[in-house]
Image (cartoon, rainbow, N blue to C red; front, side, top):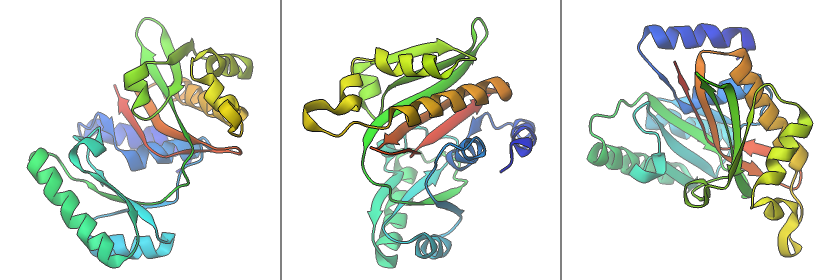
Amino acid sequence: MKRDDIKRVITENRVLGKNTIVEPLAKEILGAYSVPVPNSRTVKDVTSAIEAAEEIGYPVVLKLVSPDVIHKSDVGAVRVGIEDPKDMEESWRCMVRNVMDSLPSARIEGFLVEEMVAPGIEVIVGGIRDEQFEGVVMFGMGGIFVEIMKDVSFALTPLEKGEALEMIRKIKGYPVLEGFRGESPKDIDAIADVILKVADIIEDIRDIKELEINPLMVYEKGVMAVDARARIG
């Protein structure tokens, strides 16, 4: 997706009454701003999911695409480490059954088949457009830890690279990124670049009221936006 297409797609979503930007579209927006995202395909049926997995290369991840399911893992709407077509069929059936049992009214728009990325340190990067402060970006330790530890920092947009680096240094978990107890240091500059790009999105596309990458997987070299969601006003 090109940047010029984003506003058009968001307008189409609003006309259709869709306030939640589902993960595939959120990742297309991130990709338009050069945020690294996994190789993926959006599909409608299990046959297409198997074809997509073979194109991407096993192992893969299967995720539900629904505006009504925010925390996919809570309702069994994510399956990781799928190794072959038989595993895909079983994972598909199990996921559909889980969602129907937990959220029978959920709107299912499709399924995301995605490459299985390497493990790393999980962080969260987010942005909101607040009526009082306008653009605000957030950074913290990701995954479930953002809810448990609430170890986050904030800054107003627009911001510069030095401010993004300061956001990273402010959190209590920063030593983990520096290389705690003999672990290799992680790519702090790459995290700062993603913070700046999220700030750019919040500034450029004012219809986006919330954007969240959680987790952003951080490595010795580079990062990967594993999961993302957004909301429009």
